[in-house]
Length: 159
Image 1 (cartoon, one colour):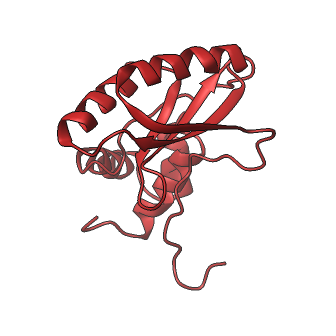
Image 2 (cartoon, one colour):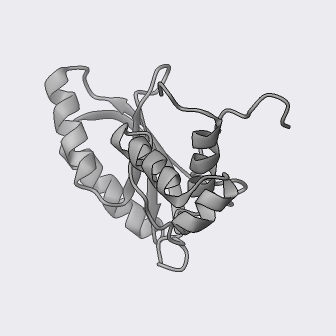
């Protein structure tokens, strides 16, 4: 993030809050001309700081309001196993997030489905893909906090 300054972080905070904001709105909020603001946003995109802009959808309104966190212990620990497992996970659209972990579990998955039978279909697809030692699902009862906004550095003297 060489060359990223306070103004860039303010732009990023505004975009994280609402990427549909107009360029004029963002420029005014950070006290830049539209051209200068556009150049900064473009540089942040080219540098990979801004990966893409998306619309956040409401899972419940779309019929996939059940969130399941799944822990997996690998059936083996080889590169070929990991490649097969990763390929299988990437083919399952209900798996929203996929992490290789340190500690007692090997992988953590976040899955969005309609209900328990839909999760069972994903589970069966997953266990058919590669040998797994243990798969355990935990259903979220309530979302108490959910954000896509990353914590950004704050300028000195701000709360």
